[in-house]
Image (cartoon, rainbow, N blue to C red):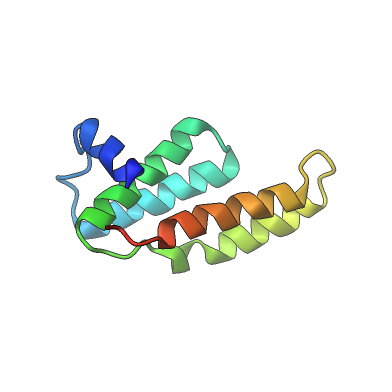
Length: 102
């Protein structure tokens, strides 16, 4: 709810996007976030997710599941990025998205 409130406070910038465009925006934002876990990228996902929630639409999880699995596998071979921490981050992200909207 805080993410939706923050999105509304910032002016609901995605309100004029079609449902399909909004899903594309969410997937693209997720792709950017998975490549570079910068705060701005996370906010873009949250904003698109908030707008989808306001429209009572589901997040397009199915479109990013393979990317998550692939990224997790790649990161396991990088000693600079502990996979457990990344796995927790992904789990927390999806858990937050599955919580009731109201």
